[in-house]
Image (tube, rainbow, N blue to C red):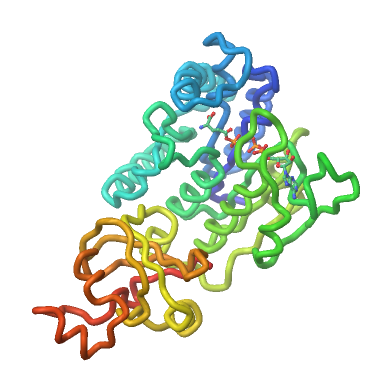
Length: 367
Ligand SMILES: Nc1ncnc2c1ncn2[C@@H]1O[C@H](COP(=O)(O)OP(=O)(O)O)[C@@H](O)[C@H]1O
Ligand SMILES: N[C@@H](CCC(=O)OP(=O)(O)O)C(=O)O
């Protein structure tokens, strides 16, 4: 039974639609987590609910939509949330610790190493690390928004054995069960295909963000990193343990056969691309299916400003993301050589360090 588990709890499970924290819900989840800890597990909690818990308290009648209003609500709600968790865990003799992260923290390996060491120390001391996005400083375009992705990155970072994403619905259905009473639940998803993506819709309640879609995104990140995922409901005593042991009310996502090394996880899911390259069909085929490097001849368009060594995103000519890689040229050089064959590249540039635009070892397919 001893295991390292990341539990993510969504706003919809912790707050009411009218706004405000449901302290009974916080106490219930703390009790479930305490039971796992007493059984020898290490548990890390990723919790949402700051905006939903805070917007009434700050004086808004509805969950705000503007970024600065959400940030103001989150700064009130985060304090309420942590206070409630601290009290709830204290009643089980457990100390709660707060860790607020932004997407940019994950871009820096140094910051991640520091966060990782802090987490290990907290677990060693028997505390529960409680994560949320640092909403007050996250800017719109770099926000996680929902915490599903954050929970997957945390699970991969700490090499968890389980990621349990708790929500108000008992798993992934063939359609949103709120609007479709005939929808059928998947007990098990072996591979996250395009079809799975297409049926996972947005948030069902006014407090949730991201819906099933972001949970499937999170499942993809975690399972590629080697962490199996449960998405579902925990409402009765013992449900969390059942969810961990494969008997939960929800959907289980299997890990992929070959989990990605940390370097590729960082490249695919944590880094921030500084530019975009559009490639033709031949180059797409070579990168995505052939296991080859990207050569200048396949690059049709270059966007953004970047230097050699930065991360860029690669799209096909229809605009679909193929993957990400570390680029060997800066954007100006690349604009001069895009579409050229190798001999012409050598003639065009004074010095050519590496012919590949992206080497296959520094590439991750995201298609
Ligand atoms: N195919 C689907 N299966 C199940 N739920 C779905 C599906 N598509 C959309 N949803 C919605 O996703 C919601 C859960 O996501 P969300 O509201 O973001 O919750 P949380 O706050 O827990 O993250 C459900 O209440 C449901 O209405
Ligand atoms: N960081 C935000 C998360 C927002 C949110 O609604 O997320 P989720 O409920 O996980 O879809 C908060 O605490 O309010």
